[in-house]
Length: 540
Image (cartoon, rainbow, N blue to C red; front, side):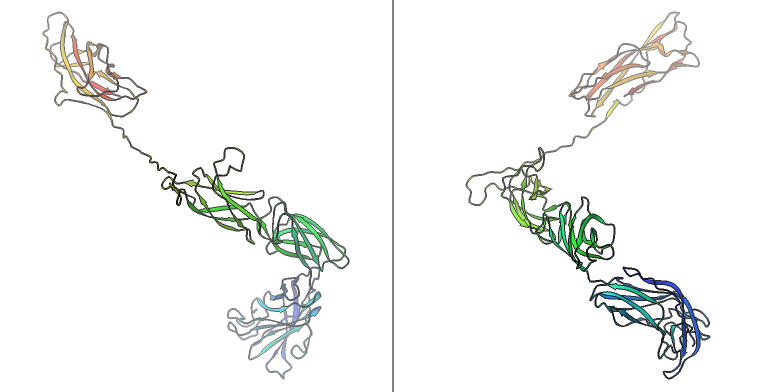
């Protein structure tokens, strides 16, 4: 198997704080070795884009640092195909400056897939760790990359190197960095008895060491990992030894929860954890009950170490806080994270809230008194009483507005007439139509008639205007009616009202019987025959 490699002809960029190397195009020189005594063969050039990074970029003494070496394409394989994992990668690096010792990076499963001959072997990502030592400027240099095939190893170092295996010339893949030993601590927080928590408006007092001497400092709040958008604008200064103090006021609307105070001298930043408290709150269990109910009260975002008073409160009638009830209050001490946990007994029937207060901080939770239990006498008391109330309910369902007639009354015969040269009158009767209003409402109703012309057989027509009636409308026998129905006006039938009932704010309804006497005026010389018309009653 033959694997070509590359020597980096790249320049590492060093700024303060330290930055990663690359990825930067470069070259490594490589040779293939079949045994330890060999001098190597098949010299090749590995041209690639190389990178070297470490996390954190600016470590502190004693901190474990993860180092990553990358190559974008990998070296070219020789003419023989290789299988996944045939060529583990070993990267030998060395620390310099304030640090010393070797650092070994590995990628054991390489290549990731089968590689045919004369083809790049694929991207490389080799990692390893070291523990940072003393403070100061330092370097991390890649000395050699080994393609560690157990049969034939390929050693790669600086381009132009001849003895890659026994005495390799280090590559120019070098990361410059600084081991930084500055510190920051919170010395006090106004309004708090602890140094690990603050809320909007509190002033955080801090102290630093190991920063740039005689320098102005800036301080902000950041995310728990030290990243994110800065909040607040604190200041401070250092002395000639790099030690100093400063302040940071927690701004209104600051992000709450786990945060850090980050202090910078313009070059390096040190940070310390702090909890930014939000608005205090409480939760109660249960949220309601009868007299004598024991309530568990929990809360968050109270000033750690502060005394919180818990009590009952009446309904709010003016500016908060609402007036207290007669129940004895209890107290709780907020824990290190601002939490509280206590019990409180509700006996006062005027309780609308259970609340907690500490100085200017106040929070309440709604309380619902129960009508299902009460305590008439407490303990050995000889006086006292309590009551239980019941709410009664009934549903009245609306019925219908309807009408009906007796079976067989749908045909109305008139008295016959004989043509005699003068106008004659035929009579008939509209039998009783019973209107029933069971809607249980305030609405009225009306019963209106319409009629067609009388059509004769074999011929002839009598106009509908010749039909008139005399309406009648009375209460149905035995009915209890809320209103009195009104009979229509005697006269022509068509579009006339037979019977109606008015609206009433106090309610309408009942059962009513409507009927009418009918009169048909037959013209003097009307054609003889049998005449028929349709009378329609509409209830609305």
